Image (cartoon, rainbow, N blue to C red; front, side, top):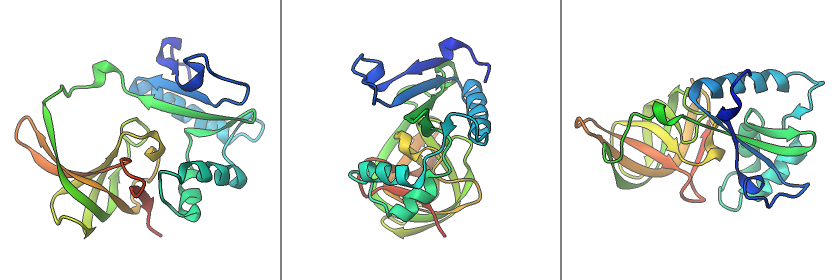
Length: 212
């Protein structure tokens, strides 16, 4: 990917010296440009059958599902359909890897207090993904349109789905019709602009899946 070494970090057990031969590889990449370069490189490597980097097999997805289903309720069919196409996770020489993309500090324009968030209850929506360009980052966001509130407060406009959890990165793609459930928040910016978003990842009942 040709990015600087100081744009790469580690997390998890390796960072605190508690790793074992069976530990996962948890990497971080900093900076939007670096992240997109790495994403493109990994995508190409996964398409090369001779590369030791591999996507999860169906059996491996089943084991991952058994672990994650404890706090994210979803059918295995939906889980496998979504997780099987992700780039940021898989196997490297039979070891699980996960890569988290984080923006650099100089890319963050928002300061504490510039935006206010207010809980408006729990809801379920149906929508079309308008923009998934921020889906690879943590936190991730998906801009949405043609929103229909299926359950919960009938507020508008609901303009995005957001999550602070890495497992919801790469979850859905631009143009897909989605169903999502989570906390509805009112977002008010410093200039008075106001809209709503669906925040997912706080409860086991939160989810985001493409609708068949």
